[in-house]
Length: 318
Image (tube, rainbow, N blue to C red; front, side, top):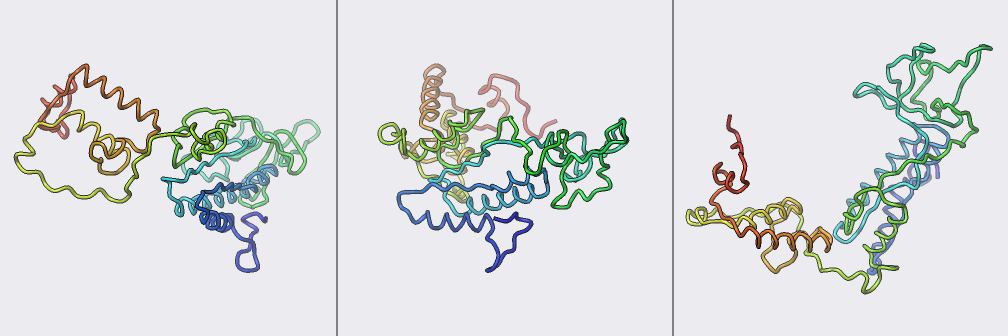
C-alpha cells in the first residue's frame, strides 16, 4: 500500500487504513459467534526504518483515524480493543524544546561545539547521517538550511546505515485497551500476556469452557443519569446508611449510571469477578468490625468530622 502522504483516494486510488478497517469490521460483525480482527499500521515501521519522521507521523495519524472509526462502530460492552506495538525504533526526542515548539523543527538550543542547533527528533542510527569532514573535524549539516517538513527529509543519525536499515529499539512499548477484561492490562507485562488476556476475554483456547466461568455482569446503561424526584422533608431528615451512600457513590462514579437495587447485579459491573469479590468481602469485614454509621447530611462539617475522625474544612469557607 502507498504511504498516506502519497495515497490518492477515490475509485482509482487506494483505500485508507480506516476504510479498509471498517470494511473488514462490517463483514466480520455479521458473524454471531464473534470475530477477531488484526489491523496493522505497517507503514509506520517502513518510514522509521528510513528515518523519515514526517511520513511516520502521517501513518500514525492514519492509524489513529482507523481506531476512532472502530470505537464509533462497536459496543465496548462485548468487544475488547487492544492497541499496542511489536517493537520500538531508535528515534529519540531531544531536549529542551519550548512549549508549543514544532515537533518537526529545531529545539532552539545551539551546540557549543559546532554552533548549530539540532532537531527535536533524531535517530541513533540509520541512513540520515549526512556528515562531511574538513580533513580534521567531522561537520554535520545545519538543519536550519534544510526543509524539515518535507516528507522525504531524513533526520540526522549518529551511526550511518544504508537505506531502510535503521534498527528497532529495545525499550518496552505501551498497551492501551478498552472493553471487557481491559482492566487486566495495568503494568509491565511479558508480550505473551497480551494473548492470554485476549483469549480469556473471548473464552477461547486455554480459557475455553469451565476455565472461563465468571459471574454475569450487569449491563451498563449509557446516556445521561435520569433526574430523580425531589425528596420530601421527612425523607431528607431521615438517617442514611453510610455504607450504602459510599457504595452507591463509588458505583455511580465508576459507571456513570444509577446504581441498581439490591440483588439486581454487582455494584461495580465493570470490575473483574476477582476484584468484585474482594470489594464485597472487605466491605462486610468493615461493617462487622465498626458497625454501621448514620448521619443526616454530608454538608454539615460536624457530621463529616465525626464520620472521618479528622479535621475537615467546610467547602467554600475561608
